[in-house]
Image (tube, rainbow, N blue to C red; front, side):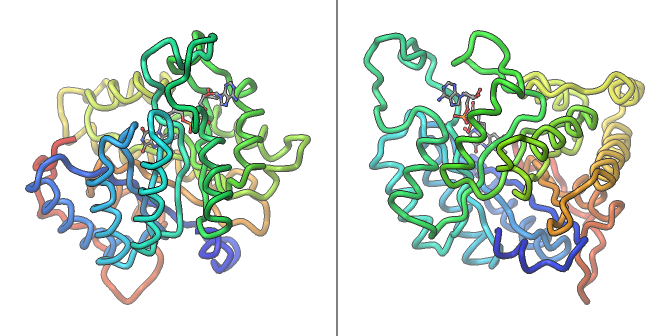
Length: 330
Ligand code: FAD
């Protein structure tokens, strides 16, 4: 990914797309067809494939990563979590990724196990190898040197989880982000956000950090197209992303009409992209956007088209309107 970024012309914008492995065979076939269309029509700089915490989706994640990298020739970044994962499982995942030609890993902790051991309060920790994402970053660098380009997670609105009794503010999380980058993180991909003010503050904080470590690192904001009123409420609850009041009232005004929610969602996301495009950016760095697609095609295609993020090609880029998006369970 960093090689591809370095090769982009100055002032270029780019985007990436996230997919997760479907649970069923029908879902997989559906997604495969969709991936073919999306890769041809939208031409993302790279795609990412999620990983179930504890390795719960290991086989399916690797299968999807294989389709993306090998069959479709897409630059693929495989997410890899480390909590609740034995060293043997991590080794296996990295070796398999390598065998598939995957050169990019998003190194994550994953959701912590729901037990006291995680608080390190004197009890035995069942996973001695990996506690935090930084442990995984260090391990990948130790075992695989520079073979993998490594991404790490950032949280523009702070981070909340079971390992901290209170919401972890950006400021409290920052020293750990510094550690992840020092340990070998090549780029930062963020938790989804709808709050341009919070995102702007986050970029400012990172770019002006006294360590200088974030001055020119690629920082890729995570954005999730709005697929329905229910999904947006659930996702923002889970991720603790705030929806600004004005934005929320626009969605609420049409909440009983799914198609209208999607249309308003495309407007909102397009405004967000344009707002982020207008932020100051280090000269040498292209501006990137990461879309959590939920394996769906249309909204992201409309946003990309509206914001002129689709790289030019002789191929037509009109989003497909013929498929039924409800067939993939999310
Ligand atoms: P860490 O960087 O380890 O941080 C976790 C928390 O612990 C933070 O609050 C941090 O401040 C704190 N912390 C870090 N180090 C220390 C330390 N040494 N001492 C005390 N506190 C510390 N989850 C999945 O299961 N699968 C996925 O595919 C997936 N993809 C994701 C993609 C992105 C872009 C993002 C942003 C998140 C993703 N997640 C995924 C969720 C992620 O696993 C959770 O948010 C997890 O709780 C934290 O992961 P992390 O890598 O940020 O952990």
